[in-house]
Length: 428
Image: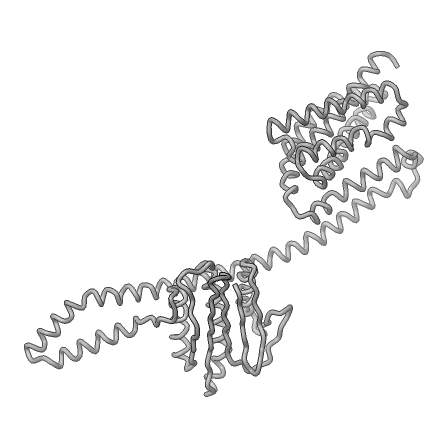
């Protein structure tokens, strides 16, 4: 081998090492700061020294066999120092090794087309290193950095293909000659891996798509329920504002009544008083507790229950200030009371006495809010994974919405049937 060939081979070895090192660092976000970049390039320079010595003084086959020890392992330690992690830098190195094969294959393709020799391959690899590196840094690296925030399970799933290829390449090409012998079991291994990986991807993607669809459906129903409840609360607040205006105008009403009495028109005064009383009564919001939002929700459902001949009994008190947002509180109470009313309507229509009971308790020291809502139920209630399942299409979303809100606050809830009563218990 002449001097030119030695220089080209040495430069090509250095180029592939830098190519893989930069890709690995970019994949795991180790080049984001100036300090990290300085440490990385210093580490790469130190790693290239033993690699150059191995090229000059060791057999080419032996150099390939110890390549993981003189480059991959030190690179893993360097990336661990820069990122504070082990798993994702390892996956990044394995993935970068997989991308190095693209560089090698392009060079082999070029050599086959041009009918060149080994020097043609090395020159081609050297020339395409920088363009391919820039292309991968622009398009692939940002996506890889996003995957770094995924759970460990997903990271392992993603890195499994790269790990299998790394093991396959070294076991069949470096440490043995199985690949060059053309044994069918070896040649067909990676296509089989690709096929299995494709099937796994299809199954995983199908499962995730079903979950996304269910979550989207639940979110749409939840948004609709929140909008309806918000409109109901706004209407009740407007009623309160109107009652406040009546109280503010009380002086004018009294003057009118005084004028009627002075002129002997007591019948007009009586009619006027009856009209004012009727309007005020229609706008009344009963006060159940200190919390305005809860008062409005309970008043709205109490009116609906009274109209249907269903009694609603409230015990306990909600504090004025809660850690739970008004929207989330509205979702829990509205869905629970809606389900209770829906269960009581056929019973009330058949002439049976029905009562919805609400019991509340607040533990200020622990910051806990506990409440129970119970109502009579006639039919056997079906449960699935602890949640009641509705027999009617389009129903059953409310309990899932309640469960989702409670889970978000790391609380607990229970749905159960005792002595003909359906009971919901919630702790937030």
